[in-house]
Length: 595
Image (cartoon, rainbow, N blue to C red):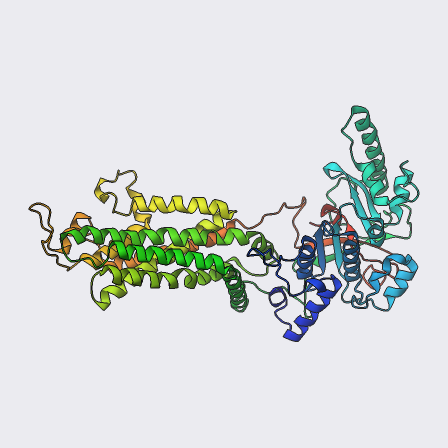
């Protein structure tokens, strides 16, 4: 799924090769061909673990070989071995190494010179990339695998920013040397963390923090606690303390630059070709997801069938007498009411259940909001409408509603239009809510509001003038009106079982009593069609407006990402010389010169 959307220009064989390579590098082979989510039914095998899920998510972002990779705590939730293996993989990606040679499994045992010698034969200058990662309590082997580090304290204060090796010397110069046989990262965090347990502890920890950050500010001359605006190499030439030969080289990488089969481009997610591809893939995935829980679907359809048969038995074979007039009004309203609840409630819970994954995917520009909502609508058409055609047919013939093929087709068409509107309403509610539980509570309340102004419970002329506008947005009203006109206009009834002297022989009289005498089926059908379009457009607009939002970095916005790469002496390779390690950095976005 992700490979086809990320790398549309690759052949199927190349996509498979990349997928297999990523699975192997992230040690996901035991979890291959396993459902990502949890168990659907009791006794069913559970999905992949939390750590495997995190590695799967990282693997999805590695398929298209991005030039800049930023990861927020990628090792959290992983055991120590998997965390180290992941960091080695990210370091190999940064260096452009051949990550299929398996050398990274013993890499932590090698010294710097041995590692560089091992990497020299496998490094690919064209596939090097910038890797930035925020790491939470990394073990010493992970720390040793890093090339550059940024140690930040509360409030964004920078305690150290530079190559990994001089970090210990920097803290020692500030008076807080790393103890022997101690993880440097643990010591750094102890020094820069404020201790609020007592006043004397707070003052002591504050002095330590000020000393380290002050030394960094003095060494870097204003870079600490600044916005890290893009710098040229001449300004940043001597800023790595304890490493005079090191310097910062600045590379500019276009924000949209990514690798797709050797070409720098991001698929145009709004192009017709990509929209169609995304729609097909999303429809296939969504169909599998919604039909996977066969027990829930079977229960839902059995319940609908039960009520359809129950309606048919209660109103079984109605005669065309005075008693049947009220009964026909009742069964038509029940049919309209049933769709007003079933479709919106069912559909409104679909998107909130998928929202976490969908937000991550659309943030990564895998597909557009239109392609996703279109797939959800299409998936729900057969799931919601096809069964309703069967259930409504059962009720229609059991109750002996108006005879004639034309009347039956109109009856079915009106209910289908109402069902489509219900799906659109459910989608508008679905994109507005963040949890399936909340959707299940809000959707029935909205349906009840539409039922109140359907024209059955009270005459439209008796609605207070300040609430009368609500009847125009009640899709139940238009479907009930059309069903009533289809059933009563031109129909005749006998005076049998008449109560008192009043006898209604013409169906037009019934429509006049309901204030439906001026209603035309075609007009209501067009109104329902407009509501289908309106609710779906509203859902699209809400979905676009609710897309994930991120804080903007300080400074003037520019169309590029300037990434500070700390390396050896500058050479023709663009600032990554023979001593460049280009591995994953433990840093924050501000420390990466991101504008």
